[in-house]
Length: 281
Ligand SMILES: C[S@@+](CC[C@H](N)C(=O)[O-])C[C@H]1O[C@@H](n2cnc3c(N)ncnc32)[C@H](O)[C@@H]1O
Image 1 (cartoon, rainbow, N blue to C red):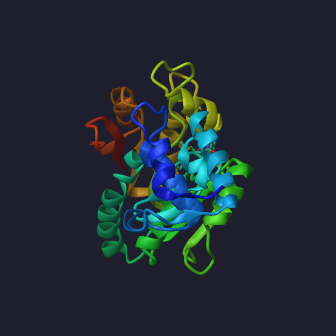
Image 2: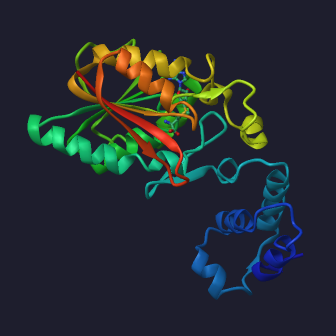
């Protein structure tokens, strides 16, 4: 039997429903291929039997806790849309906050040197590196990951024409790079401590563990990046590292020990220490 979008949303979006109303709406919009405005202006639109079947399948996944982005297969990031699947981390709003700062700092370096190389280490879906590549087509962007599965997803987001300033490198962090080549290194590495009590149950259940967890209280990969970046960054090159809410103090210590300068901490929308920025000396 067919039904109108109005009736469907009403039945799934009751106050006692265990699933998020906006997620239900987005699933429906994805299936019927319409915009939010259509939903408001055409509540009597009838969805087909086939669409209803797909919708019911999506609702079941939502009820099981599968993140919306994995169900609809994409996620917005800084105004661009990226394909995602269970092999890559879902791009986060707290990561997005660093983009304007990277662009600002990079513009200053570009003005001085008339060229710029930026490395996105642990690129996953490519959300950071590909976004910067779109925003600054004159910069050289290197996208690195060591997971062949992630690189497969990255390749779906990579468009030869649009991202002609990008190179994809499979590497264990910065090992595959030449010394002294980067003006900027940015990374959102795995930084969650194994068995962290703060991690959302569904993130643990559905997102790839190689993108989430690191040994040494979550600091293992950050330590490697700080150490390797020293020789890959040019003098005065900048390192941007995303980190957990309680890791800044330790990271600042490490940066100082490795003679990085101009150390700065950037907060996310919730006022949490989210990025540590520093300059190679
Ligand atoms: C937290 S995810 C970040 C993904 C994406 N940059 C983002 O911000 O959404 C970390 C990424 O680092 C990659 N990674 C983990 N260990 C790595 C290593 N040794 N070398 C290179 N990449 C690694 C993972 O495959 C994953 O894609």
